[in-house]
Picture 1: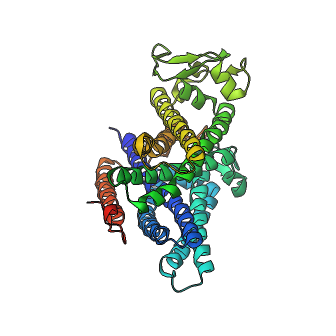
Picture 2: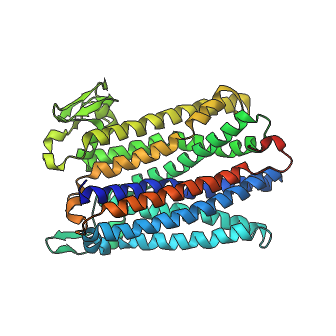
Picture 3: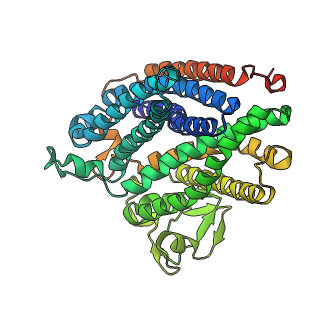
Length: 439
């Protein structure tokens, strides 16, 4: 591997690790507040206990997210000094605001964790809501940086560097509303599905566990709503990509030739040499309809762009298919579950539908990772699309294999530690419920 590949691999590894725990850190406060609201409305000790456990989980993930996020900040400067040196002043505002959101979340999380019996109930609930708002704000501001990298604006590009800098314009680059909502909804969806899958697993082993039935009743509404909302948000995001980043759309869909009435390809593996997608199922005119709302719309193909500006087509296409496929499965499961809820007047707590939620538990995280791969791979070979290539931004320092393997070991250690600590939270003996204890 070259130093460029090691730098990209290290950044990719850091993002892949950080995004999982950051997403859970964004969503768990929402689930925590929902549990708290149910506890206040019903005076049920199980919901109170659930909100306490989710608060502890939020604190754990907040700490890990802070560690991995700090590492990412250093990596941006150390691995990509040309990018940060030239364009840090252009896109520094959302980084600063993310720091404000981070500290705000830390303050209110402390109040929520340690002020349950020390502050008024209203202030305690307000602190939980602020934790959720601050977590979403952090994700919002960080995603704005990615939006800028995909569609840079707010400056005039010159050979000497950016001039006429407008930080606010750069922060809200075209398409910001689509990508930020897409990311935040995916955080809620992935975490709610994971929580539902976990409690489904325990209920299948311990059918009488009332605590876990109640926990499932908190996770399932959020999981179902986000699973049905995400395809709509994703469609808007894809339409923006079709207009603003046609080469990325062509890679996502395996579209090699410019075509009027382009088909939608399901599955398959692109062959760059032959310019075909092997094994795909084509839906006539489907891509033109989805991308532009017109069955006879023209979709630009990869062959219309310089070969050295193509992203890794096969990787982007497969990642996109994984994201769409898992999202479709989750949406279908959500629809079936809501029909069950409407007909039975209760959330599922046994049988085939509960087993389906067990198996669907990881799908949100799979879709989340696949979506980020589409975004990052689809922008290549640019670190700042159309302005700076990734190869021009990498550090000149050699031997990047050493930090890559070091960070890999650190992330493995952190991941195992977090899973162990979180499992202890779930496996603790629940008051008055011997059958709810997980051995």
